[in-house]
Image 1 (cartoon, rainbow over the protein chains, first blue to last red):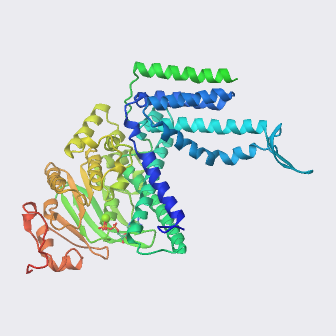
Image 2: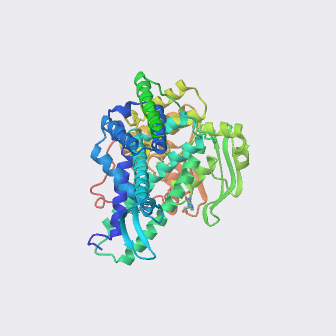
Length: 278
Length: 274
Ligand SMILES: Nc1ncnc2c1ncn2[C@@H]1O[C@H](COP(=O)(O)OP(=O)(O)OP(=O)(O)O)[C@@H](O)[C@H]1O
Ligand SMILES: [Mg+2]
């Protein structure tokens, strides 16, 4: 435990602050860049196609090529590349490690061993060629897919993304829920941040780790109660403004020639990636 | 009064989760074109009463009628009744965070007119009008939940304004507004009323109450309706105001002076009262 607040507390506070900044700041989405100028519907469709290509393609090189395409798009959209690469690849191990790691070994993926870790008469543990291949594929696929998803979210204001999904005929309810989820996530993070600050401003001297744990538990339940209260309130507010189960929205997108050009190019590349890989 | 009734409440009691009582045996009537204030201390039930008038909460005991029809959960299941009721009655929530759920300010203000099924041009013109009146055009693309508290309040007001309701239910509308917007909004309430709208405002601000009301209902800390009358009658009843925790002994009124000089007293505890 360090001097200023416990480890758990600091980590939660850090995560909350970083998330609030990174996800909810729309600074990047409002820059002038290639993807920012692309019609959101075209963006959604082409990115779905690219995602599909990443998961269908059977060539390692092709997936790598798709990643470079993603980086190229990010660069043309004025996304700081260092930030973009780091953010994604630092998170990937958490999601895929659990699955990818065991796949390396002969127990799960039998094949030719490259490195033998343990050798006895009854037990043999080694990393296999096939295992390495499977794990690499998995990590790469997830990494590139996440990069694509992150890139599309970073370059589109949230409101526009929701509207684009709506125009592409995703069910109303789904989009409303997505919108609300985002709002709650914001409220929760924001409240969490404020509670940390409020507590810091009231804490004189040290808290024991027991006190810390109790405080975190109490805060968590306060947050839950708050979000429940909010969700009820929001529903009533919608009702009172005439909501009858079907939210009406305005659609005001118009396709430009550059949308056709970029949309066509990216779709062709996605198709090519699938065809070459099989 | 001879005017058509908007709301009639009879013996209304309301409890939250069967435990916390928010209103006890409240009966009142509001006619068209009235300007009403609901006065009461914190926790006296003002917000709850407005939620009931807005057809969002339904009391376990007592009757509520709106525009001559029973206002019940059952009645609001009828789409055409719900539609006409919601179109006529606009509620400004006390907590703007609850009221703002759209991704941008523009969408927020457009929500109500879109639900009414107005055509696109009309929606756009209503939204622009509301943004202009509240001077928040520059916020149009911002996310409502990321605004300052006062800005949120303005957006919430604009989002009701674009509905063009006949009956305005306002829950502490001026709390958190800067002085210019506050005085604009008080004037706006008066104008609304002059052109024939009904305005019901919940507040515990005694200074503005004679501007925004011709009639006052007072809720006690025991959640009962204990008095009604004109602003003159209520505001001169010092004993009543003290009992309802709406004033304290060190308070003195500035009549209409509040717009003329800043409402602050650096020498607050030096000058003599009485
Ligand atoms: N969601 C809720 N759940 C449980 N009790 C509630 C809830 N909302 C309000 N109450 C209780 O009901 C009573 C009346 O609350 P209400 O919000 O109507 O008061 P109010 O007059 O608007 O107060 P304020 O001036 O603080 O806004 C209070 O005792 C309050 O604690
Ligand atoms: Mg209230």
